Length: 442
Image 1 (tube, rainbow, N blue to C red):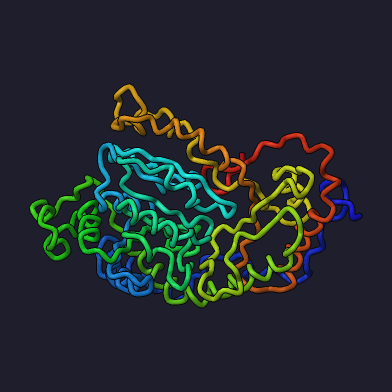
Image 2 (cartoon, one colour):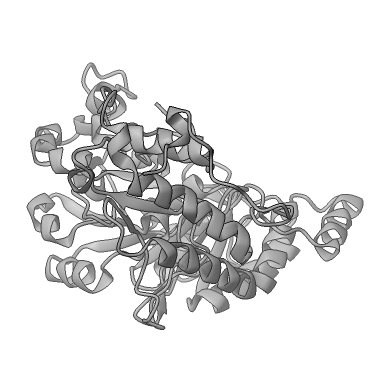
């Protein structure tokens, strides 16, 4: 038995060679820098010429007819909600384990977020969807969480059975595929963040894609002052009378520096993320078959489904396979052993936050989540306890294939797993950790 570093042993030996670009992301080229300076020197920050080029290129890459760029991902998802007609008294179903931007803005439309359970891959569980559906349900917000493609066959079948809209949040899964089609190509509309930490990183930006002209025009009219005009919004009669004003009273225009960066990332995205997938699959192959930790990934032998840029990679953690060792203690040991960014939990479940319990946006004296609903959707939280027990932990997000370094990081995890019994004594804080935002840990 090897003594673990957390208990005074030696940490895993790392290679003598520098890590180089192992974790560097995004990759910014001289071409990107020249494009940025062109925007600066021409003072074209708020123009549309480059943004429209990027939209056309992105739509073609995504396999959609239309694309609209926004200032951030939350804005693009908000526009998607308006575009499908989400309104007062409606309900929208969302997996409880995700980031705020997926569904918190539903209260702006007087709608109620209803939360669905997740499966072991931390993805929306189709087996729990129909429990969530009521006569008030308008849409399903599917999140491809941590790059793992949700079960779109089952979800779309349920949506069509009940005549519901489907919005895909692709913020974690740019370029990921499910049975040969890109995530974001299944629902009525998809939207995504392209902020600087994402796999598709374009500074601070969002994108909406759809095949439906009415959805495209409603999304355009919602948050684009100068583009809500007959050049863009010309087929949806009830919108045409409101030309020039943004119907949401908000301005969602993307900065063209971000559009430049987005075009540069798109040009090389498939090539670069293929190497990411090679590195990540190799890492997980080294840990295959060990107890307690399993990859959240598509089957590497299946060429029709893959993880895109593999944003925020995590492993599913099973404490019962390690005599109940908590995810918190496990991650603490991995950090000491060599991978210093190993944290448990992912995002906390949204249904547990006070925002979804009692926040009163409208000053009506009652929670805005249920302000316009004739039922208290918060009572459904009793069905969501299983979501809190889906343990997970973060693993390195390799951007380059470097066998020596990947082997070393894998060895740090393997050493902890193979010697976990040393950690059982002193494993007192068994509360599942996590974070509400970024990499902050609680």
